[in-house]
Amino acid sequence: MIDIESQIFTKVYDAVKAVYPDCDVKSELDLEPTAARAVMIEEIGNASNQQTASSTEMENHAIIDYEVNVFSSKASGRKTEAKAILALVDGVLLGLNFQRLSTMPASLSNSTRYRLVSRYTAVVSKNETIYRR
Image (cartoon, rainbow, N blue to C red; front, side, top):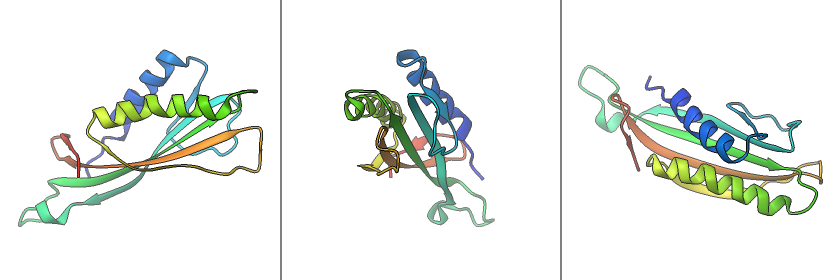
């Protein structure tokens, strides 16, 4: 299995913390973050690309998918802040050759918090080169 999750998480973590040092950045989804700002980036798919497998069934490429959840509970401007944080994450992932598949708001039972969800995909080689699909 081609696994680049820790490298991707570290790049997103570093970029977010540089601008929002008090933001909670995790690699697993937490629908009840305690911080006023939070980012969760989670690998939600990792499948062998059978079109490039060798005759010995060696995995040469994997199709890898990530989901990013951004939360803001800022008293005023939650939506604007969530979009700004997501734009930062988006820049990192697009810069790594991921393709954004979707971005949408997600409802929460807690109306004092705003949540955006984005999904990304890329093809990654066994040498960890990332290609847009």
